[in-house]
Image (cartoon, rainbow, N blue to C red; front, side, top):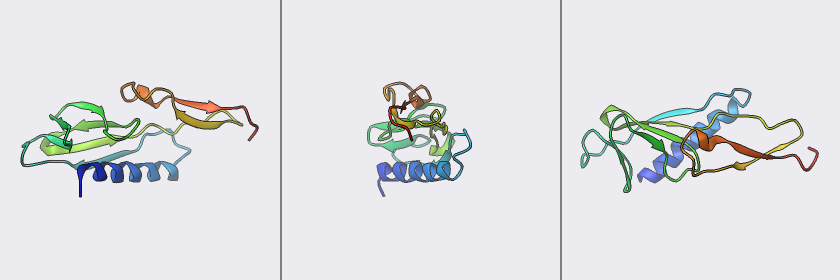
Length: 115
């Protein structure tokens, strides 16, 4: 299975976990092995993303999820905390996905229609 598919599956599982605990404001955390014998000790997320232990950044192919490379090619993914919009409003897109994680977690909301 490709690294991109693995990342998507991990983040999807983390998202399902978040839905199950929507009252919480905790971010979902998932850990996986992204070691690759070509890059010993590093985390190989995809062809363009090879990280060293201790490095952090944003997960590729996701608008806003954090990733940390740990020892032995293990990776920790973090999603944004679940935050409810104001009463009567709908949660919309991320405000600025170019920001680093977790600053990219800010979401807009639409209060133009009564829900």
